[in-house]
Image 1: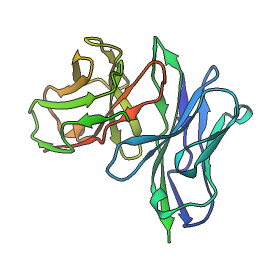
Image 2: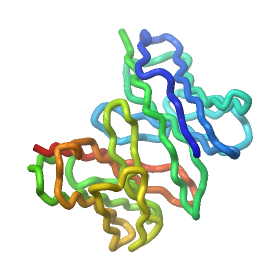
Image 3: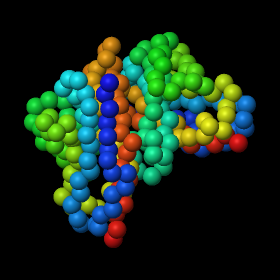
Length: 115
Length: 112
């Protein structure tokens, strides 16, 4: 069975500081990996995705993530955080099944940004 | 851009009422999903659908049913609402070609 662990429930950073959100997964084959962001009171929005190829992927809003097979990790990074990045971040893993895609989500990491 | 809309942002119902949550997507996606989101538990899949009139149970289907009579519309039904169904409900859609999901803004349901 596939699973996703986001070890940090909350992360607090100062505006302008760098950010890394951790994601570890368990999956039997090459996974499809995703990061989503949820702003307060909103639905989830895709930040970036990894299917294959280059293990460093770029996303929207200046985010990037690196797939490390040996560590079963897909950590999200941003070099300089803005106050508007305060949100809930979800990592997800999965693959196509029966012609569709059923992801498993982590429990989320809440990012707090101090001015 | 894909747009997924949900019929209500906030809903308050009483225990025992029948509740309908509607979701509509405008990008002709085959797949649609219903999740509930609770603090500390992340997103849990209730039901999903691959096609019109098709439905599959997710991880927590008990107390819920769904209906998909048209490709663009996926309804979640609480036959007899209970207080433990107070939650945020998120609808999503996806295409088999692209795999990632597009989410609606969510419906925050309170059952009193």
